[in-house]
Structures are given as C-alpha cells and as structure tokens.
Length: 204
Length: 178
Image 1 (cartoon, rainbow over the protein chains, first blue to last red):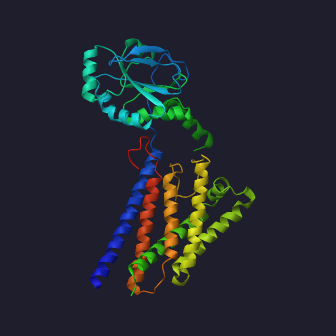
Image 2 (tube, each protein chain N blue to C red; image 1 turned 90 degrees about the vertical axis):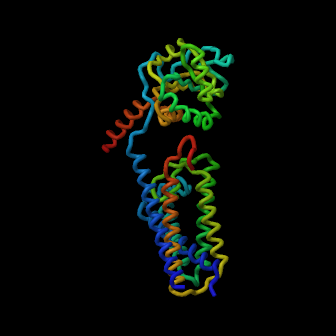
Image 3 (cartoon, rainbow over the protein chains, first blue to last red; image 1 turned 180 degrees about the horizontal axis):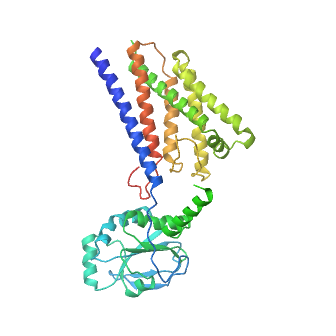
C-alpha cells in the first residue's frame, strides 16, 4: 500500500514538473515570436505600385483552358505565382502553396505562371501534381509585373488592383502577402518602417 | 471507504480553487489592464469599473477559499460555476458581436489568439467541472489522500498553465496545428 502511495506521489510530482516545463517552453516560443522581426516578402523594384490597377489579360493555360488575369473578377482575389521547373526554391514552396490553396479558397484563386517551352512545364505539372492550378506561359505577363527573380508572387485584389507583391522564398513570405492585404500594409519594408516610427515616437 | 469519484472531485476542487485564486491575484496585480477589460469586454461603465473589478476579485477569492474547505465545498463549487458561466456568456456575446479581437483577460498574459471555440470550450468545461464537484459529497480522508488531492490539483494547474500558454500563441494561418 505504501509503495502505491509513494509511486502516486512521485507521478503527481513528475506531472507537475512536466506541466511547468511545457508552460515555460510555450512562453519562450511566445517571447521569440514577439522579438523576431516578422518574415515578409521582399518587394523588388517594379513597374506597378501597390494600389495600381493591374493589366487585364486573357491567356491560355497548359490544359487549354482560358484564364483571365487582372481586372475585377466577381469578388475574388488572384495570386500569381511566377516559378520555373529549374528553380529549386519554387519546388520547396509548393507544399505551402497547396496549403494556402486550401486555407484561402473562399476568396482566392491561385495561378501559376512561367515562360518557355511548354513540354518542360507540362512535365513539371505532372511530376509535382499541379493539375488543380491553372498554369500559364507568358513572357509578357512576367514583364508586366517586373518579375526578375523567382519564385515571385503577385496578389491582385477583388477590384483588380495590385494588393501586394514580392519575392517569396518561404511559407511565411507567401502568407505575408495575405496579411499585407488584410492589414493594408503593402510590404515588409513599409511594416518595419512604420514600426520604427511608432517605437521612436513612443520612446521605446 | 472513500470512493474514486470523491477523490477525483476533491482533486478537481483543489485545482479550481488554485485557478480562481491565481486568477484573482493576476487581476489585482494587473489592475489597470483589468479595468480596461471590465470596460471593453465586460461592458461596465467607466465609473463602476473599479467596484465591479473589486467584486469579481473578491468573488473569485471567496469561491477559492470555500472550495478548499470540505464543509463548504459545494457552496464554493456553485459560486465557481456561476463565475465561469458569466465569463462564458461574455465570451459568447463578444463572438456574436464579431468583436473577437477584444482583450478578454482570460489568459495569464498577452494572447495573440482571437476569441473562438477554444475559449468557449474551456469555460464550458470549467463550468461543468464546478457543477460536477458540487454534486459529489465530501468525505474526510487520511493524510495520504489529502496529499494526493493537493498534488493532483497542482498538477492540473500546471497542465492548465501550459495549455494557456500554448493557446496564447499566434495561430498558424494555414491551421496545420491546433
């Protein structure tokens, strides 16, 4: 009997320690979240500014369907992701793209864009199972948005205006475009600049 | 002979008492923040907020003390259930009014998570737990039983604190976890 009581006491104490350790770890994660600068897509120099109307285009996707890019599209926004089969970071970003496709499907259509020979891209679509995304090939489209490096994303709002844009290397960069649209901050540079001004004015 | 249900109820009573006491101390130590919560989340007019906050803190401390004394445990559990239910109703009201980003003061620190299903479930569970404690009779046990009750209550409080901290983290946008 005394053995059972003793073991029970030890188990309760073990559980208390475990709970305290979990609490400390979770708190540490929270502190880290607050301390690190937010990850955001880096906006490069480009012909269009945030808020500008985007050029309306109708392109033919790899599967033969017609895709309208830009302009008002019945209340839905559009994400253009410029990528290439040769770009390794683009491939690493695809799981994040699929998860964004599921999480943001109520308001967002995702379109993949590239240029070059269609055979290589069709093989890329098959290999990476990208059949559910319209995939267009157009050099003119890339030039219109000033795409110089990959993977590059452009978010067009429901009115057809440029909402946010930038170089997206990670899931956080990709999601920062959606957050930028929701908060009205166009890019990471603007966010950091505003935060610096707020801190300076509050004397932090 | 003490029954399993009675041991469990006693452990849960200690947990609720510690939680209510910690909550009262936290509210008192962050007085100005709690006043803001009273005004914005509780909907209490500014001039009445200090009195209302004092009443809430006192109610939580009284419920905690009553829960720790076996003879008054039922009364303490009923008072605790009433407090959790009021908090639950306020959270529900904020959600229905689409004011999910309000600071509800229901976490031991700043929270990045908007009000939602987690807070509703948590307060519902705490309220149901208090009702359950009130429905179980108290029986005096030996030192080992009382030690088990205190340790059990402390362990549950530590686990509650861990859950509180985890759920205060910013939710992931794509919802892969939690």
